Image (cartoon, rainbow, N blue to C red):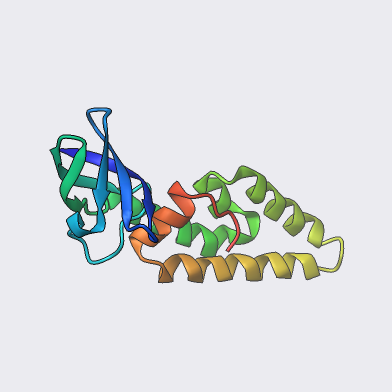
Length: 147
């Protein structure tokens, strides 16, 4: 059966999976078959034994994640000062802030525009060094609009 991890508590080493059948299943870490600890929001494939999940495997990341990562990095590099990468990732408020600070920066002799350009370049580097799963968890599924 397939499902999604709703919660995982590292202290108790247990969690809850919401199955695609709309039932919830408890699990212990001993049933986890991955090399990394389970994370909330991850898609999994498992065997249901009553209300307990057994033999849990993480589903591989989809290719759509990496294309979103690459596109966001390219936007950050080429159009980052205008906030294009923020708009692309759905952070419209932060994109508008970057755009306005960059445009109004010319009035103040370019210093704010330079700072926005540096921020965009740092975000470009951060996007590239993160793994696809980490990028997805941080910027797409999670909500981390800055750095």
